[in-house]
Image (tube, rainbow, N blue to C red):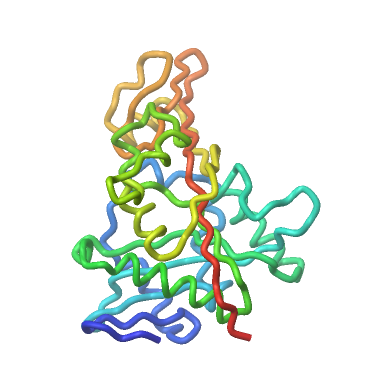
Length: 254
């Protein structure tokens, strides 16, 4: 448990009464991001199934941030700690391994969300540190994170591999969220090119974005890190989101 500036951060296992309240946060996710089928099937269960790997921040009795991660077995044949399918893949692995009682060899961060009213105060970094510490207390020495670069949507047609090479004069990443990770000791390891996949009919995408989706080809959508591919002949559009793998070395507390 940490308590700084009136903000208390604990694991969800330590404060189970807060679990139903973690969705009180006023976040700003693009509407289309709420339609990842893997996330819709499993993500809401992460805190209940893995409370020791999830953290929550409160201020004046209100939930102001949450962080979720999940353990999985990266040592099974055909697996790696940093799969190309990123977020979707490790989430599926975590629940499959949990259901079968397999021992976890890795932990992946899944989200850190800060209430809109508490952005810009350094809370995201504190949540990242708390999430890493929670994994360390479970005996792990590494936390990997399929990170969603917060400013990549401003350059949707630039490849993510090129984007992560952009640096400020001080050598830190130009992307704010990647910069937080690096300052917290993280190492950028590569790209998860198909970390999340969201598909829908053209009418779905019109409803989610307010855009016409009436021409074949790539469509730039506000908030999307890469263009959405539109196919009018077959009446669907598909968004494949790239993320960036970041590795954090931990000190396990056994």
